[in-house]
Amino acid sequence: MVGPQQHLDAPQEAIYAPIRARGYDAASALAAMDAEGIDVAVVYRTFAHMVVSIDGLDAAYATACCAAFNDWLADYCRAEPKRLKGAAIVSLHDPELAAQEARRAVEDKGHVAVVLLPMPVHGRYLNAPECDVLWREIARLGVPLAIHGTSGGASDDFVANRFRGQPSFRTLNHAAAFPLELMLALGALTAGGVCERFAGLRIAFLEGNCGWLPWWLDRLDDQWRKYGGGEKTKLSALPSEYFRRQCFISTECDEGFLGAVIDALGDDNIVVSTDYPHADGPYPHGVDTFLALEGVSADSKRKILWHNCARLYGFDMEAIPARE
Image (cartoon, rainbow, N blue to C red; front, side):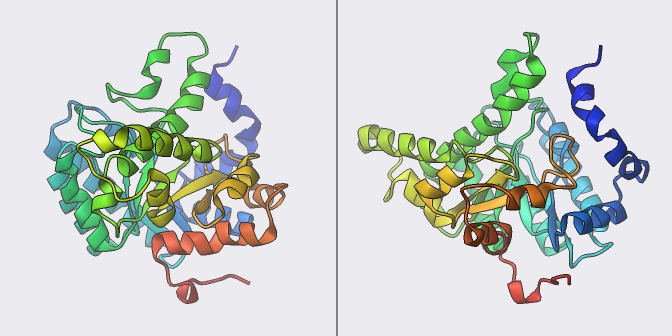
């Protein structure tokens, strides 16, 4: 009997074996992009952020781990810098140190986004006042803040912890961790006042589906109308208005609810991820799968694949090298 991860990996073994043999190097990533028809990719982490999800890490050590990864990723993308763009990681163990590393990673290493996990660190969450130093710096740098979850978080306050040791842990962990942590992060950054204080901050909520978004924004708006007048935090707009003004969310290539999300909220704030090289993604047919989605117009697909991504990252579309 095989375990859940082996069961997932087995059908993709032949596809990923030669890529794994190369150590997932930059050349294999570029070849995968060619197979999918992708001109430019923003490269995100997996295991590196799991390491710094441990609450008890010394703040300087956590920041040093982030810096080491950011240096490595910058070198990785240097293989083809016009097509490979790095997204730097930071941690909330010390927001001041995180702001310093964000500045170094963007200004000295060329990263195009700053990535955070959505979980609290030692009880400090995204709308804590001491995090303002980080939001201020990211806004000044002109790159997006990307909130990107994981199913392998080691933090004490992790939404999937309650499933540990229970039946079907891997299934429930993976199903719950990504969207639920993003929902809470979106609430903290909109209803929690961060978007109010930092109107120039672009925020992306990535790899947790988007089908839940219309309901969650409606729920946040409803609860703010009922309770917001008594909160110490004061907002000049509803949570959904902050989202429309400065936030983006990613859809998966095969997400069947995308059409309903567009019907409810429009297509201006949606980007797409192929999730390469994870076995639960549809590589090498991610883009084809997305293009085949029913109930989504060609114009919407064009915006989600290209124009919205360029706006999120602040790319000059004329300078992006389109392949023939």
